[in-house]
Image (cartoon, rainbow, N blue to C red):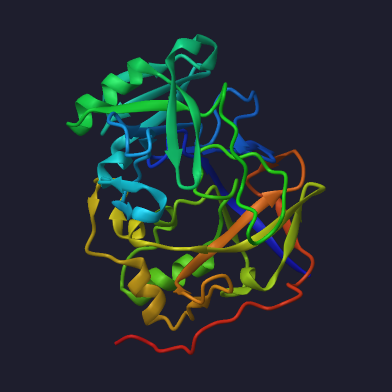
Length: 315
């Protein structure tokens, strides 16, 4: 068994946007949220105003998505990170780079007449547009967009290809919770001579106290009596190279740091692709409140250890 401590907690209310730091969070099978349940991780997403060829508004992230097999033709933008949330008097507010404040009034003020068809990765279904946020985001990103809420008719589940589960999902990429080891992030940034910035990996739970890359040895962990299943390592992409404070591409590339430090690339068993990884994907088995400082106990090693490509340190 192996112990880690929760160093930091955060949620991103809008997909691709900046996070809100929390001292404690309610962990549900669908992800993290504030204790009162009013603000949920990845509960909002930005989509194109125009419809794709198959009649859905495609989602935006901080990177461009071009994948004909998934009907994705979406020019992303790192400027999404300039959408900054804040909790004030139990209300969720957004600013754009600290300016032009707007309040999200919550799903109780949504209208069933604003249901729109959206696509997030493999999910094609309905969400509720929030028109006031659509106009606000469109103005700041200088293109016509919509903001949709993952409630009401939303009916998406976490991915099933690595572990069968019954976890609902909002607008996260594929799994409810992304934990990252601080020591792993620290090693990657040290290799490129940069200050450690774990937020480049856009975690919800930041752990500390783990030996380098040991998080990947385990199939599950326990926190406050609830088991979280580690479905798979988290593949990392070029979004890690975006400066989350400036909303632009940075000269520091954490993926280069992973390679330079000698971190091996995971060979995915489903497609044999070699992937840089950072952190894991958690499927919570129940509901509990977690806090900064809580202990996470890694109990069982994977029945089949991960397979990695031969390490080739970059210069």
